[in-house]
Every structure is written in C-alpha cells, then in structure tokens.
Amino acid sequence: MSIMSDYIEEAEAVLLHTYNRYQVVFDHGEGVYLYDLEGKKYLDFVSGIAVFALGYGVKEYNDAVKAQVDKLLHTSNYYYNVPAIEAAKGIKKISGMDRVFFTNSGAEAVEGAIKTARKYGFLKDGRTDHEIIAMEHSFHGRTMGALSVTGKRAYRDAFEPMIGNIRFAEYNDIDSVKACLNDKTIAILLETVQGEGGIHPADEAFLKELRKICDERDILLILDEIQCGMGRSGEYFAWQRYGVKPDVMTVAKALGCGVPVGAFLMTEKVGQASLVAGDHGTTYGGNPLAGAAICAVLKLFEEKHVLENVREVGAYLYDVLEGIKAEHSDIIDHRGVGLMQGLEFDHPVADIINKALDKGLVLINAGTNIIRFLPSLVISKKEVDDMAAILKECM
Ligand SMILES: *Cc1c(COP(=O)(O)O)cnc(C)c1O
Image 1 (cartoon, rainbow, N blue to C red):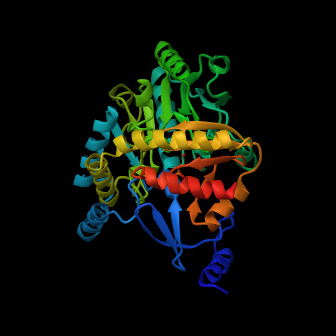
Image 2: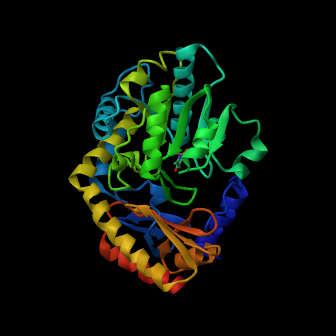
Image 3: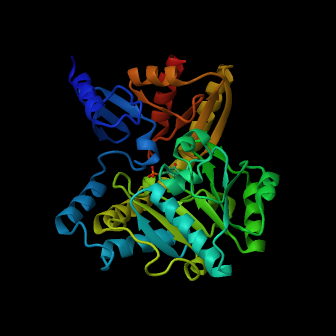
C-alpha cells in the first residue's frame, strides 16, 4: 500500500461520508502547482474552488498571516480590532458598498443577507410574511437558510421544511421573475454568474431589468458574488461589468485566499433600515486573523495587477477553449467570464477529470456534464497551454 492509500483508508474510517473524494492527498502547494504526499506535481485549475486567487505559498501573504498569529488571533466582536477595520475599508473601496459584516464562510454571508432582507421588510411594513425570489439551478450554501434559496431540489428534499416564503424563478428569464413578484416580495437573490449550476453569466438586460424592478418596488437586489467575485470576472465584482449595483452583496472564497472568511455588504440606505445591535452576531467573524488575511489579499491584488492578468489570460483561455470546442463535437457549449469558464459536454465528464488528475492536472465539474475552469488568478498563458495539452490527451 502507498502512503496515500493508507491515509485515504483512514479518512474513510473517520470522516463523515459527505463527499466522494478524488483519490489523492495533497501535501503542499507552490504557485499554481499542488504536490501530493508522494511528491507528484499537479497543475491546478481549481484553486480550492475559486479560493487561492493568488496561488500557493505567496510569501507576503503567509508572512502577514503568521505575523498576526503571533500578535493576536481573536478578541470577539465586543471589541474593535485594527485588521478588521482596515479590511472593511478595503472592501468598501473596491466594491463601493457602505457597510460590512464579516462571517466565517459563504453560507453564513448568505444567511446574513436573508436576515437583512427580512428585517428590511419588517421595518418597512411590520409584516413577517415577505417573500424572496431566488433562481433555479443556483447555489448559495448548505446551511438551512442558504439551502432554502438554493435552486437544486436534490440538495433540499431530505431536509424539508426549508425556511418559508421562497419562490424560484428561471435565471435570465425576466417573465419568470415577474410571475413570482407580488406585494410580499422583499428581495431578489441571485449569483451574478452561476457557478455550481454550470457557469451561467447573467444577461445584462436581465440584470438591468431586475435593478429596475427592485428600485420601483423598494425591494432589495441581493447579488451572491462568493464564487464570481474577488477578481474572477476581470473586475473585482462581476456586477461591475454590467454597472448594476446590488443593495446587498455576499462575498467569501477568494476574499481570504485560504483563511476561512466571508462577508455580506450593503448600501448605507439598507444599513440604516435593517440589522441593528442584537439582531445578528458571530464569535469568530472578522477576527484579527481574518482581517489580516483580507488586508494581505487586497494589497497583493493591487501589487500583482491581478485584474489585468485575469482580463488578459481569461481572454486567452477563452480562445484556447473555443479552439478545443471546435475540434470536439461532444462539446456542446462554452461559457464564462474572466477566469471562470465552463465546457459543457453531451456526456458525463468524470472520466476526463479522473484521467486529467492521473496526468497531473486538477480540474473540477459543475453538474455531471460540465468541466469548470477556476485557476488561480495569477495563472499565465503558458500554463493555460500546458492545461490544454493535457486536457486534449484526456478527451
Ligand atoms: C461556495 C458558494 C457558497 C457557499 O460558500 P461556503 O463558504 O461553502 O459556505 C455560496 N454561494 C456561492 C455562489 C458559492 O459558490
């Protein structure tokens, strides 16, 4: 038995079986490469599911996190701490949003957004029967509230009842949204680019129409930028591509680049008319370690010109994948923005992904028939070429 298969056997004996994991134990990372326990090198096009935007082993980031570990890890939210203040200022600056609440994960950010919407509605008319419109094929996380707005029945069925008063509309179908609207509607929630659902970017006209509906009715547009945000689209947040600003926004994944952090943000108007002291809280959220990680991420995004790289290499990846699509009739669609792209096949992709892993390339699916490409945002054109060469061998 190899070292890896010993560990895998141990893992299956102790971990709850909620994942069908790939048969690999990663040990360390360097740049855009991962290494397994036996020293095999892999080109990584998943980056921990859109988390490691800056790549692995970035000295400045690691040093900043380590320095904070030695200084102060945690105090609780009953006191102020400088890293969280600086992190909030930094997120405000890149998003143009006004108020930040830090969480530990994406799902918790979505929970906060839902509570914000309900409180906003409650303060507006004193009622507690408001409805939220969410989208089919969406993904917002696995906690009960986030699950309730996730548009995948198979994830929800065994855990009913969900939180109530959620309606599902078809993504990019304005008539479907209008059919769900009524005088109880308090928010419309969607991913600016659907991730798990198969890399579907919002149509500009759809998003603009949603903004208009929300303005007319004084209801909240909530954009989930957990996967598509933090530079992945070529802008800090994907909505900035469309010029459609949300009232509430969620962010996580690449925000901490490996330290588990998330946040929900809102405009001043919503901040003044929703959650107040006593309404919401978290023990760990926005602690000094989380704040230091976010500050380091924001600083390195600027220093490394990450957005410019995403635009340039994202366009290159687009062309490369178009080329592959042209050569393979089993590829039926290619979609995406920046360094968030997907190839849809007319058959399951598990075989291709397993073969790629064998050949030292880490890829991930979105649904059964779609390969998702979510590399680190500092990836180079040369590494895109290397990826494409391996991918072609696997098809
Ligand atoms: C990953 C993801 C979440 C959930 O984030 P967790 O940190 O796993 O809780 C929510 N929304 C979107 C769009 C995501 O991609």
